[in-house]
Amino acid sequence: MTADAATRRVGALDLFLAYLRIGLTGFGGVNAWARHHLVEEKGWLTEAEYAETLGMAQVLPGPNALNCAIGVGARFAGAAGAAAASIGLFAGPLALLAGIAALYDAYGQLPLVRAVLTGIAAAAAGMVLGTAIKMATRLRPTIPLLLVGLAALTLALLRVPLPFVVLGLAPFGLLAAWRALR
Amino acid sequence: MSEESDLWALMTGFAAISLLSVGGGIAVLPEMHRLVVEQQGWMDSLGFAKRFALAQAAPGPNIMVVGLIGWEVAGLIGMFAAMLAMCGPTTLLAYGFFRLRASLGTALWLRVIERGMVPIAIGLIAASGVLLATGAAAGAGSTVATVLAAAITLGSTVFVWRTRRSPLWVLAAGAVLGASLLG
Image 1 (cartoon, rainbow over the protein chains, first blue to last red):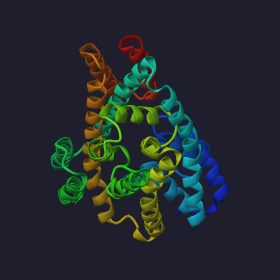
Image 2: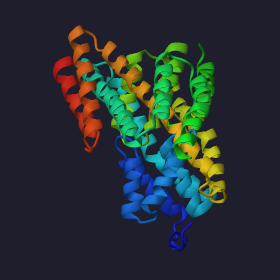
Image 3: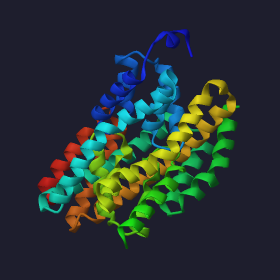
Image 4: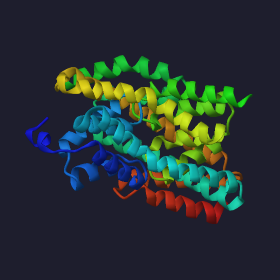
């Protein structure tokens, strides 16, 4: 922790309120919004500190945004901070989602609603594909790392169960990364 | 199937998936699809893709799709049960890791793990995109609608890949195109 970070006093309530806001503004996934709020608006973390926390959050199993909230919360206020940030992150969206689910039950089968949702579903699929391509090109992978990624894609499309894909490819991924970083 | 056994299957299924969700919620969508559509038959592929779309269009973490699936299976209790199963175990793991993080330093092995697992995560995310696209296109109804859904997916892919604009634009465009042509 930098001296700078040590002097910032952020309590559990601050964390809860910050993440409540991040959760409710976080359209299309919250990571970009969390970075904006924590780094640029609040100044609690530097760009590098946030990037490192997010990197770790992505490698750990579990939702990235939640892992990141736990990392940020624990950094400033220990277990209470981690709990406050996590609860704040989900409180707003869960309440909203219950409303959305009830509306879907009531109106989901109307022809217009069905058509609109099919259109959004098609667009959301493209959003996931575009994100994957963007992440892959930003990473500038070495050939072995690229092959590991393509193998994961192929195996998942062949419907190979996830444990086999993740655990089977992990040694190759680690070896490729070790060679690239050495 | 009784509601209780559904709830149990929901929780054990998502808890197991969560522990392998390297790369986050979207990377494990194919595994969720296997559980929800193929094994339990709680909904069809299009229903799955639509719930993902709803969760994307609403604010909050991507993982909220799990809450919508839980709602479909067992209402409000199902929503909380599914979210708890998906987030509980990994929360403890992440907390333990971040508490230890300070003493781990910037060791080479940590960077190796990060660098080595990320390609797997990206491959899984890409597979999720293909699966969702197939679900949306196949469920669209007529041949024309299927082609249109595929075109929306393709346009959205390029938009998100090549621009830095908010992905909300493609969701809004998808809604309008879906309403005007599929309806």
